[in-house]
Image (cartoon, rainbow, N blue to C red; front, side, top):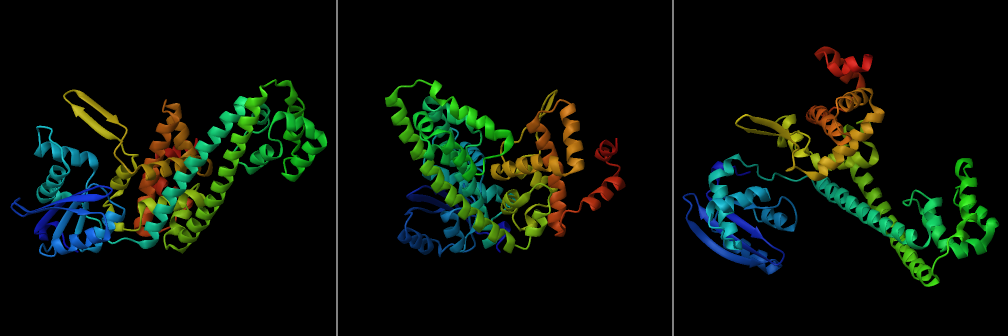
Length: 413
């Protein structure tokens, strides 16, 4: 693959939904091409035709994935993704007056690639399983967020017309709670059906556990104490049933996503590595794999992975002021996955629990303690990833003994 030193032309690609502005400069910074293409098949054919004259072309663009990036790579260009915040600074450097147009943005990117691109990392060959897994995992999270929004809307409706349901059920992700609303749409219907129907429902839904069974029956019996406007009840009943239909459809789609994610994860050679992490489980392990990837050359050491994951703090020093701040510029999907993994590992790893508890005793918040724990886990994960070795608790204990880890002292205290 062409390195930055071998590039002879540098393009700035300002992409948009329906068209893209392109500026190409040569090694001396002179603009040699200035054009716009439509985001259509014909537009991309035009891109290939126009860039045939510029061999060894590098392209700077403010994204690292998507159809535009795929088209650029397929055309043979060397693609260099640029952080949007960096791109804004490059634009301000070229246009201190504040001028901003798509053409100026493309020019700033092209010249930045020419002058500073030697320190940038170009996109390498992509693992097709990792790419599909990453998109599926991110979309699954988006669907889960949609489910949360629907549940919040449902709970708000129930709060307005059916408080008995909220009192009787706490977990509204569970289909049994949805089935209750479908079977007994409001308090009047619940009272009319009677105790025999309540007991039958709880039995069918397998909700006859002793610790909750009698309590729910008592709550159902008191449903008639609420006096509400009949118009409100009818309208909100219909709204609640509509939300439940949406939730059931979404639940079916999430099951399909989960099956595909588990299938892809099982077929990847690194699945055993990430699956061995205590607390990762079938949901978090694929997310960690998809975000970290399989390109071992991507991170020279653990600190690079820690920075991308957002666990490594940002240093600020000015005069006598020295402080560390939470890293904001990072892969937020990886940071979220590491937060969940660190949380789960506290319950499944003795050293993780000891480390977390020690940080909490020092006054760290829950999120801060998990971030620090994630920082330590990423150092372990990077080593596992590089050596292609699954996590071994006994080996980790030996390493702690060999290095005199203070965490080990907490475990044995």
